[in-house]
Length: 379
Image (cartoon, rainbow, N blue to C red; front, top):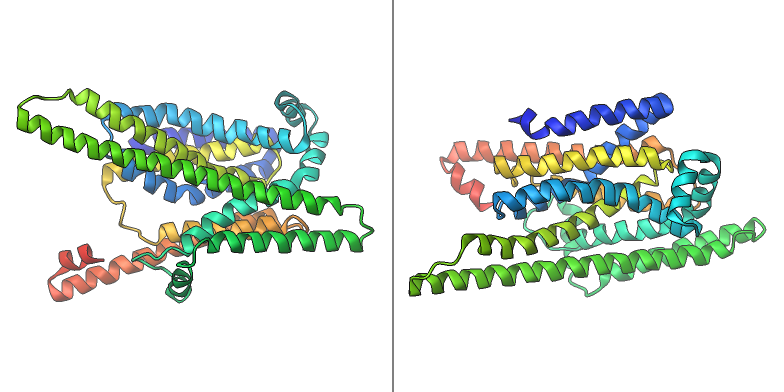
């Protein structure tokens, strides 16, 4: 079962790591491995959401998501999108950006380094909004209650996450400008770049969230209409084609999944810039991670264990928040790549272990009272 589900992911991992070793030695091998782990840790909640929707789709649309969707995720968001980021920030054509990445690494590295403040501000704001919207939401299951409970109460204030994100951006840009001024003012204009890029990241997050909400609403409308038509068909004795039913509902599900996947993969791509500026290593690492996310989605659907490890989603979002802070700090200061990669791994591992301990406690309580099923279903 495990080999059947993750077989392609294992194969892609082996090929990707071997290619990285040939491309840049053991250093490249390590960076690709860290990127893959980062992508998996950041996208675990994506797999959970995908699985929850995918299980409602028929076999045909599941196959479409796991084939066409993989092409869009791996080659679109993980390969093309980084080129677009560099091309826009460095003000060059995408073909020229790819050519530089492959044939003139020193020049490409310099362009990416020059554009890093804008990239970090853009990505930092996008990631920060994901984290703030999660932490300010009042949810039944809380991991670090001493933090999440008071923040959930604060989250009742409208637009609080946007206000905090903008305050962080203003402080960051002001600090950058002050630092540049103290060193002769050679990079004072970078403060404006940081401010504009950060606002662009905020707008992008709101647009992606709006599109996701739109498709989610359309999906709910489609499911409600489908239910009404099934009831009408039962009353009149007429039967609708199951293919039409599956096609209409699943089409909106597919669109919704692609928007969600794009938004979640976006944070992985942006976060990768905190680890490496090499587009080849970025594509290899994120591509491996994307394959595991897809395999994990299938595994969760087939096993039906979406709620077994309830704190993993929390851990993933805390990792996103930590990565947002790291990106904003790297506008002015360098942070070791290993530290950046390990922060997410530690948070995910911690949340996983907390989930395991919670499950053991619930099982012990159930065995002690003879009401295990009732307790488990009531959490």
